[in-house]
Length: 355
Image (tube, rainbow, N blue to C red):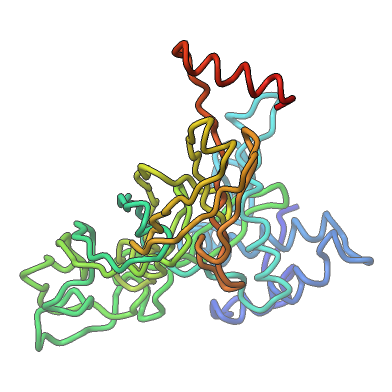
């Protein structure tokens, strides 16, 4: 016996699409298999009835021939909202990707609507060692997709009338049918015609040809923070590529840092290897250190300092919110490779003294 889809949904034959949808959501919520008193068979039956009656062409065919159709119902050809088993290995193939949106439509009042978003883009800049330590403001020239200056993103000629979009009837979204393990469901996506705006211009913008965006070069100011490391990324929200009717993506800037002739970085500290003569290590000395700011600082090398010993100059390292790091000096004693006869005699005397 042929199924009565109107009876399954509890509506009369003249029911509107809104009435069908309201009845469908109520019954789908009632019979959903994940609920305590859910009924899988009734859930599928309700879904099949709705998918048939909500489609004008299928509803017309159903009203004429019933659920079996003129030559019998064939689920392998799509049928009235049936699964497509024809291309699956072992007999079944399901799309699980949209179940979250589907269930949200049942239980959350309309499902999730993901906003349209432009593409993220990236670039690189090179900094000197000093710029990475103290921060710097840079301006770069970047070619990217941006909102059209003429139409301001509407896609219409300035002054042109905006009509209601015929594709989505002004809703900014269109409905799509998605198949899943639980049946065929209705989801929504941004309208490709009006790009979610619900309106289309009667005359297109001559600059962007109705796209609302165009590729152009833009100057972008970048405030590089003090103490940034090589390889770090600076994220600039909303400065990626624009998209009509949506949010622009982000711009990511990779930082490259050129090496310094004297210093290396170790966290918040700056390090350097200081080569000194053996005599300076024995007798001590004063070393004039030039900081990154260009100032001179006197560093006292004490008598008898050892190879590899560390000296610290406080507060002259990398700035941070917790203050500044230090400069760490590692002593490297240059041992003489050849000694004169006089030098050997002097060292022999020192040896006799136990030095």
